[in-house]
Amino acid sequence: MDLISRALDEGIPGEVVLADADYGRSHVFRDFIRSKGLDYAVAIGADARVWLLDDDGRDPRAASVRQLGIELGEGAFRKITWRDGTHANRKLSSRFVFRRVKPAYDDGSAPAMVREPVWLVIEWPEGESRPTKFFLTNLRGRMTKKQIVRTIKERWKTERVYQELKGELGFDHYEGRSFVGWHHHVTVAICCYAFVVAERVRAFSPSPGRTGSDRSLAVAA
Image (tube, rainbow, N blue to C red):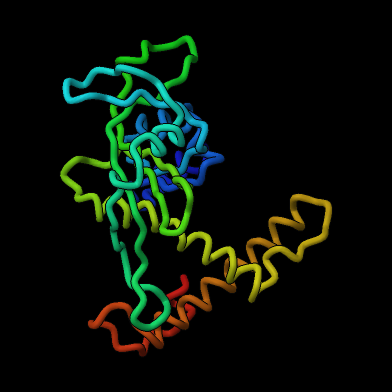
């Protein structure tokens, strides 16, 4: 949360925080994100409990998100394709269901019913015997379900960065015992990665307006 606050203070652009279940399961973290005026789309554990809201906005019962997905049944899930895959002629798709819920937890603070209603997004991939992935997001109703899924799935880019940092630049090879040494190692690895990404941008520009003549160091900076 300190890092997010510092990023906002420094004016780093961004409107949506994505996170895995280690962060998403924390209502303190989710509430903090909202207090900063940001939106979130976070994974949660299968045992997380929510109140399923009916059409009148009431909360008839609390249930785990896995139980809720199983009770809804495969027929409630719809296939959504969110982007092209890395292999030719392959699109990334899965089956999802959306339900309006309120997170169910008791922290002794504000009454549960004043909590913000959010989307529970459940994914049930083809070939699986039951739902496997669960997300909470407060992304606006003006977004289509495909746009919400696409936003949730953007976290794969972070995973890709870690893979490349570790596989190509030795990000996980530090064996020292001091914070200063670890900080130096991580800083050098990230700077090298910035240069690699800048080389890609220079050679394969994502924008048709770029010429590819920019120097990589300038792009990385």
